[in-house]
Length: 512
Image (cartoon, rainbow, N blue to C red; front, side, top):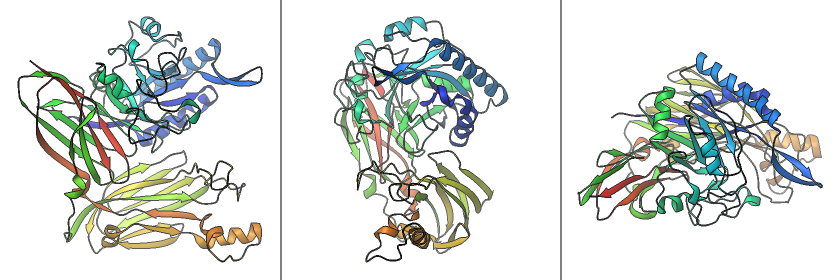
């Protein structure tokens, strides 16, 4: 069976006071995704004796919002069936069973019982799935309660989001963004649920409450037979899904021809694991996990070193825009508009949008030339000197096929920057708008010079041109034969050189 890889954000929380921007969210989702699932967030902050506490909205407000979203989803699916939209909301209950997003294939009610089992009973009869998220927080304190899990009701689990990784209690990716909800605990993670016998697929998604499909907050991959709503829903229920931390990853994992998410029996003593991956950056290594523990590691970074390069090369590189004035230094700075273009003597094979906020556009003029307009926000800090930055950037990953000695011409606000393909393959580079920063320092502070560049460089807008990676480094298709002696579940974890990660859903193999 041939499948196509579709990408989505199955955790776009839109609040009561954001409903008027629903169409803007939809348009952003269409720019970034292949289909969308709205996760209405019926909660707000209220004060109890002066203490801010998150609570659920009144039923009148919730129903009013729900009616608007229902109508919106029906209308968009009728007008644009090529971009399916699913209706959904977030359910938290009493916090004893973990937070779940509730999605309907077509229609359904918004209900808010205190326990997961009651949610299951109230929604019986509907085509519905519920997806637990930020699972690895403490049990009874918004972490996942696997003791109450119903696999057919919750066939998927969100392993990564803006909260971080819920893979396991001691995984290599942190879960530290939302400090007040943490730290990460044991017994509630995705791997904990799988080890104790639950059969769930694995996705990642945003949970950022700001904009759908925010780059770097997680995406869900779906292996579907086509782009119809019916086939997507079928794939979700069959667990033909995977998760990635950032960027689009095409991922296929099979054992003896059985695709990820499936379960089968065999008498074989040797299993054939087929892994097919295309990543955004170069692949560092691929790990096959067996029953939650590393079983086999393939260090791909050692395999794809290739020099000298061919005369014509196919490669990917990332172009990022942003950085700029610190709000502590320049509090009146709000945003920066970038007008730019990219031209090659070869061919632009694909462009992936790495967007984290509204206000972005891309126009592919022809096979060798594109223009774009980006909006970035300035860097900000927590208020402490040398505090943590909440910086976000905007950009693209370009895939280009061109002669190795040809030029890539990048234009930013009327200024041209020229790199040969060979230079891109050798190293990364940073374009620093230093003169602009010096001019701002003089206007605001009367500062003309300093014995080192800090006041100017630290507040300068920048463009980062990443090191290009050739096709050999980001495309992988290989089979491995490994011994099999007991019923087990397997999944793969793909590590990229830039620190990004992707997970497949498990495959459950039982011995006759």
